Amino acid sequence: MRKLLILALMLSTLSCSQALPQSAPASFLQTPKGSVRATKDEHIRGNRRSMIYHWPGCPNYDDITPANRVEFKTRAEAEAAGYRAARNCH
Image (cartoon, helix red, strand yellow):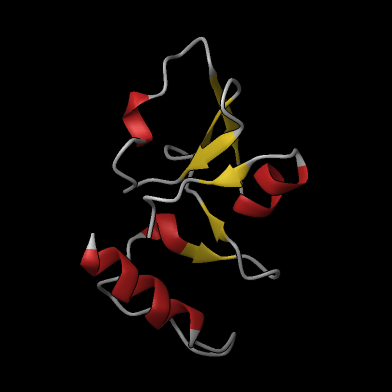
């Protein structure tokens, strides 16, 4: 989890003209608004009952039941739909 936080901090300091470091996973690409965007295979997952969203790497990412799962492309999209980030995702 600590590695993901460090990686997210590294990516947030990159400018648009710089390439991503080779160690950066594709699931942490930056969108123009600065929110995390998932790849084709990984999405931001929201729980429609709790209105909380998780991104790949969060402790409870896979724990959302399929019946309650709502998928988003970006964190900004989830927040625009009224969801908030899980507090255990860092």
